Image (tube, rainbow, N blue to C red; front, side):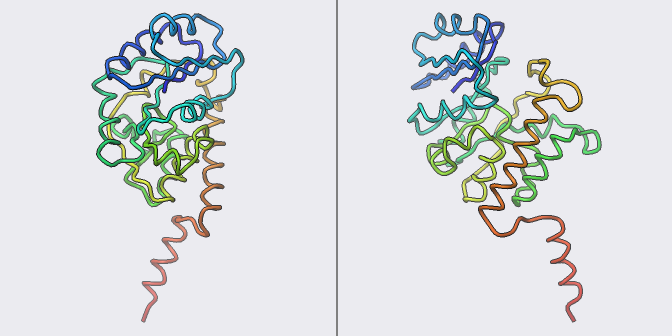
Length: 242
């Protein structure tokens, strides 16, 4: 499932790598593009189901649309920003085939030390920590590529996929197998846009809001959220026994 917006410079190469995977179906969701993205997709991926929206629907909305259109047992999610070699995409599919429900991009080796990380990275880590999954560090469904099993899509719901941190929180709290499986460098290779650079840029603001929605969903799912304060209280009780 490929989401694209104004990607005429890269979508051809992205499609070329996806086509090497011999996918059963290819869905291209073109969301508000004003350049030649649609025409290139039509010419290069004649086998694909292409859904074109003339006006922007919003960030990550294409994921929900693609999940709703597909009935596949495994759905690989990609953006059109830059091509990822097929041999780096295949492990996401293999992971689902071997029992993982949510196969994440492992960006951990790409991150600076904690003190040099930005607020978005800290927010991702905090959510995973509250979910009892410190091992995931800042790995998140916010980043592509990632893959989902059909069971995962049905468990979290297609609508939740347009808010990736919320979908991840629901996946974990509902007992799905979530794992970081492959390193793909989206930090240095991701396309620079006016909306994703600078302090308090629109994309960063959106991601922070998505995490607030994830915490809200998590608190609605269960009565308590695991936090450091809860941990400190537990330790204090143990220390004060006797």
